[in-house]
Amino acid sequence: MTYAHPLQADINPYLRTPLVESVSLSRLAGCRVFLKYECSQPSGSFKSRGLGMLVHHSVNEAKKLGYEQRPHFYSSSGGNAGYATALACTLYDAPCTVVMPVISKKIMQQKIKATGAKVILHGNNIQEADLYLRGLLNKRKEEDDFNCVYCHPFDNPVIWEGHSTIVDEIIDADINISKLRAVACSVGGGGLLNGIVQGLLRNGLTIPVIGIETEGAPTLQKTMEKNQVTHLETFDTVATSLACKYVPQKTLEYCQNYDIRSVLVSDKQAVTSCIKFSFDHNVIVEPACGACLASIYFSKLDHLGLNLQPDDAVVIIVCGGSSTTFEDLHEFAISLA
View 1 (tube, helix red, strand yellow):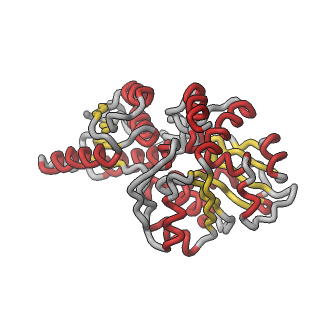
View 2 (cartoon, one colour):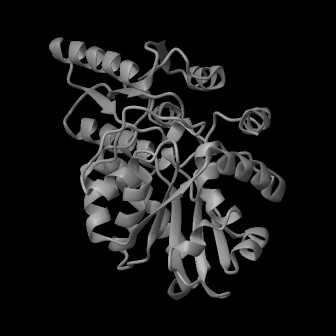
View 3 (tube, one colour):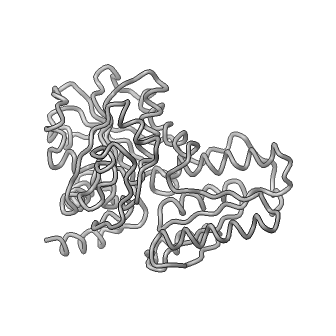
């Protein structure tokens, strides 16, 4: 694919999202709870920041190196990461291939195809899809085509840099930073958590970061318990976006040197929180996001020693997700009853 138009350096693959105080959640928490609406990103999730920055960075680097064609981006994903990559590629007229497990939700297959990306269904899980994708990349390189980019869903410093912009926006918002006591986010592979810590450190802040997982996908907690990167082989959670085998070495380093606190919630609490949130705020999010919301709906922050006062503030990253409908949430709720 040749350049359809000159690369515009000011094209931004992600949006500046609202930071809104929630009256209902503040009442429950006994402090001021602010929601960072990452669900309003183009892809419906925070992934637009990290994967979008990776696409933007790679296109610029290819141009600097004198490539006449834009890079071909390759993603293995069951949903949000692949969708964010594909959408970002549309901004830069860059080709994109997404390999998805055959069990991926039809709604995500359709959304990714609608961007113009090539979708390949292969394997019964993300590991098998990723192995196939890497084979495609190796074949391209054997053909002396090095202008291709592997888009890992979370383990890449450029992705973390993209996610770190969330913190810049929080600081720029109308919030008293001196009263900010914690930032809470869901944790799957740790990319979002890494970005938040990176953003806080860059801005000279040492505010605790609360990493929230479901009980059936405790990758971060196991890593913290063992004080080493720990690979999980099996998962049992409806929050499939959190089912990542490991968190990166950088996440472990942050756990060792920064104030990271781990919280586990049940699948039922995550799904119930999604439903409550839909009624309270008229927004549908997937269970992976519901896990973070459960920290407020089910008072999970009370046991972390934060000693929150009424004028203190907590930011909840509403990470979003594009694969879940309201009907899905009710089906989850019935199955978990």
